[in-house]
Length: 331
Image (tube, rainbow, N blue to C red):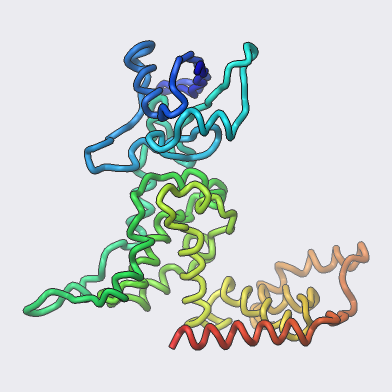
């Protein structure tokens, strides 16, 4: 089949531009094989990373048809079926671009240093205290080791980092790859720094609470690590061990659950005061939302009364069942 590749190219200190290459390929030909052919047969100056069969799986991560993926894993047939873009001659088109959220060095090669720096911020190694095991190796039961399997599958390809909306708008966020590794350490029976780790991850912007739950990291992960699910586990651990006074993100979630449990939905009159104003303890917080409250009152949008939901009893029962199940699971 004939296919046209549109590759986003960029040279140092220059603006990116699209360049088109036509190929005759079999439907099962991988995107990486196509890039090899373009480099070998049409333009030797095309730059991209690959390390197949060198035990560095994940090196060929890039954006294919607008989503981050491994070029060695995706093939022309599936791409042209999923994305029916064609050029003016009716030939199927496959677009290839470098990973997002990382500076481009040249063509499809990005600078991965910010990715590695963010990973180091969560200290992705068993704690020093945990490694001090005298006279014998540190044994784990099969059940303890099984808890690490999903996170251990991460090949650090950068696909989740590339798609992360939170990272795009908040450079301080460590990224889904780092937090997936962080959850691996929290679940590791050999690690002795759980309390310190949770304190480190309990950050409104840089840590677990910086995740916007867009689900894109789960969608693009080629190894089914499900980074967003791992971040959710960190949040659950924080909510189980922290009180509403420990941080605003924890308070936000606990207040929301309490208000819904009490009235079936959120009482907006109390929500801002309880969360931002910390139950009237934080005068600066209250002052920060006062102008908004006055504008809402002036425009007639401030709720002066609260009507509980007709299904409050059922909602409360569901919440209590979930809370009881969580208590059992944490024992």
